[in-house]
Amino acid sequence: MKKVFCHLFLSLTILLFFLFPAASAKAQDHLPIAVRLVLSRLAPLLENREYKKGVDLLRTFLQRCTPGNEKSPDLDTVCSHPEIIFSLGNCYLLQEQYDKAIAAYRQTVRRAPNHPSAWLNLARALYEKQNYPEAASCFMRGYDTGSPKDPQLLYYASACHLMAGKNEKALKILERLFRTYPGSIKPEWKEYMVHALLATSQPLRALPYIKELADGYRGEKQIRWQEILLYHYLRLDMEEKSLALARRLAIQSPSVSNWWKALTHIHLNRGEYRDGLTALTIYSFLTSLDDDEKKLYADLNLQLGIPIRALPIYEQFLTRKMDKQLLRQVVTIYSRQGKIKKALEHLNAVSLGKKDIPLLRLKGELLYAQKKFNQAEKIFKKIVELDKNHAGPALLMAGYAAWQAGDIENAIGHFKRASVFKKQKKQALIVLAQLIQTIPAHP
Image (cartoon, rainbow, N blue to C red; front, side):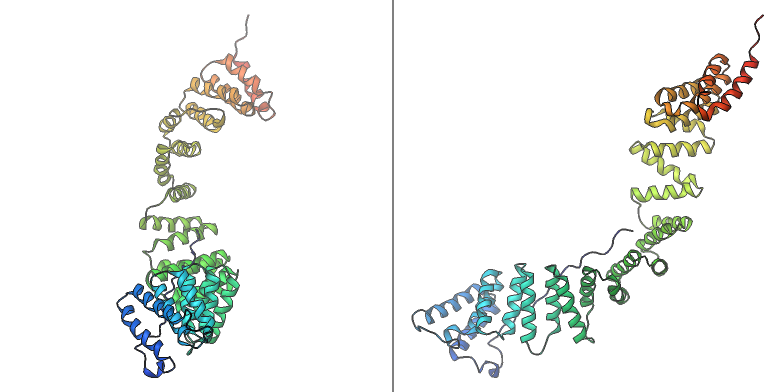
């Protein structure tokens, strides 16, 4: 069974966190008047997606306020207020100018380390730049500084660690998430838990989560997780569980071809070839078989004594590309069906050389069966010439063919040569004795 588990792709939907001027008056009480005024002018620009104008507004404010006006501006002064720098970062982020956004957010969190929105938007920008380890750290800072706590941020942090290949860190955060919010676990969190556990070589711990996802989802996602569950049962050598699951899935959803495919391989791995062929046959009704599957279908039918189903598949392959092994199977099937002429047609259509001794021997035997003894003798003599390792049995058959053709002299010669081979010696001498008796004595 092909591996069905694929890597889980991250799809982070991360909200931007702004301090909108439309917030309550109480929420803005702590802001200096000048900051509130510039943010109120920024709000409609953002609503109209005029982000460049927003950048110009904020930069003009900063340039007018900062250079030379204050030699040592305090962190809480209007000119360096974190919300101004934060808003500038937002304008850059909305234009996908990630480097500039990152610089602004870094400046914001240096001045306001407990600014959760800045940490989260910094995480978003770092994520877009594929700086996954630092993005994960920023999501954690956003979680730690935020109120109320948002468990989704732990999920984002673990996802970024997975993207970075920091699987142990990802798992540690996920375990904290599941431990802290046991009643709020979302399916996608379980997906990442599975990913993290598999990435840290803990498939047994992953199985309960995989089963929950396979049972909980519906439609295509359910089928996907059922495949993953079945794959891991097989991978972990849970033979009975994999067989029971594949049977249940095939019965529940008989039109899903993958279940019959899986059932085929499970039965074959158990040596249950007839059950495997049954499952493969049903699978073939639901989808077109690829070449490997067709070959398997033909081989199983041949093995189980149903050559009539195997023959057209083998012949189809032979019309596309010559395969001597398949040719031998086709010829054998025809010969067993008594269709010797058809078998010889296939053999006569190809050139046979030193590497094809089994086919040459089969051709000689078929010619002999058709009483074409002279042709059979030539084939067996050719075998002797091509491969001395097969000379003994070939000489014996050449002798019989010559004898049946009435060529006693040649027959005796073949049997004499065959008698020097240990395995053929006894038979050759017996036949020689019979042949010599048939030769009339000279006066």
